[in-house]
Length: 299
Length: 296
Image (cartoon, rainbow over all chains, first blue to last red; front, side, top):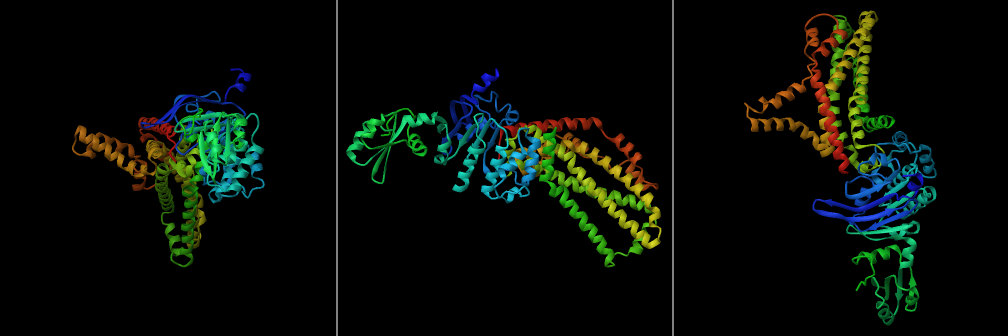
């Protein structure tokens, strides 16, 4: 593969990705590509297979089918791959017996792409001191430290699995702002899973919804905005008229009927009520309740 | 190599309590107690100093050997618990996933733990044992001087004995570690799979194997089986036999060269080689388990 071809090749390629735990199949043959320079959100309910998918990408579990990350088999070549892939699996996963400076010193010897200077600079303006013991840091400080560690790694792919779990809103906002401002470049790809989907919506370029081991939605955010529409109607007559356009989801909020449409004409919808683009969480709830993302009515 | 050394250093930092702080604390307590005993008159400096002049070199050699032996016992206990716990320590607080995010293989991480078991931990305890002996020597020389006024006259001979015993302890430690490496690797490998359950399991395993042989192949009893006999042979380092025993019963100064040539001649090098192959094998199997299962 030439350098130009390598630059155009997807960072992650999965074909027929399957995973079984005992007799239960968790992933049912996923097919997807993740191109370079994108920010992907992998969204799914608990037990949908998000972490298993990430583990397959990170070489932490062996799966059936084919998966390639930066052109390599992650399970067979995990150690090599981790030179160009960084991940935060859980904010609490930093080794607690170390001090911050000890952690940085060790990493600068263990990881060829880790920069101790960068890590220290990312901690400037925080309350984390180099002499601090990691076990004595608060959960928020530990998340900041972990983010500083992964941002100081010059990686091509950064995977974040529920990185802000258990953090308050201030830390969560700061975490994602830091990530966008100080880390993301065109050469880097970011893959995030979280339940707080609305908080990362602004930064995503692509979205993947996973439900019960199947990918039910995989598209760019621009396409999502074009394809899905939310209609709010106040009267029953308009609601009945809207139902004929086959909404994929419908619910009642404060006496108003809220419907989500897949591929409906926005002008037609506008004549029936207020039209907007659904938030990711609304779309997620809508799509989680039907068999596939293909146009199909909820009722 | 840099990454490997850093991984060994990580083990040292994580377990500095057992292998550095606690031993130094023990030395400080014992030294403090000794000083206090002289200070409050619990031990008579003149009497004990006079005792040292009866057979000074032998007393010192026995003292140094005794201290070395005590620290070896401490080392055996801490290494056993390290292997049974330290090999599974990455599971704590989800840290396994952090280490898996580093560009180092599971085999490399487990080998680093085994290398730490064989190098940096014993080396630390060895240095502490030298320090203990040096403090003993200082106390003995000072009390001899108080009692007889010629404690310093023996100083050169005492230092010579100190060096002879220190060299012998080092050699015995190195060869002992090399001899027992399959045991350490087995306990570490079991800990990788079952965590701290490796402690009872590693104690049960020999009995279970012997019992299995006795049940299937027969014999007088489980402790009269080939498995039991082999494990008994493989567990015996034979340090106390040979030169050490004859020196203890005879007169004469302790000699490092005689101790070393005797010990080296009595070691079963073939069994040592087999032990090493076994150790590398079980660590490889454990690393494959660790590669496949991310238990936290």
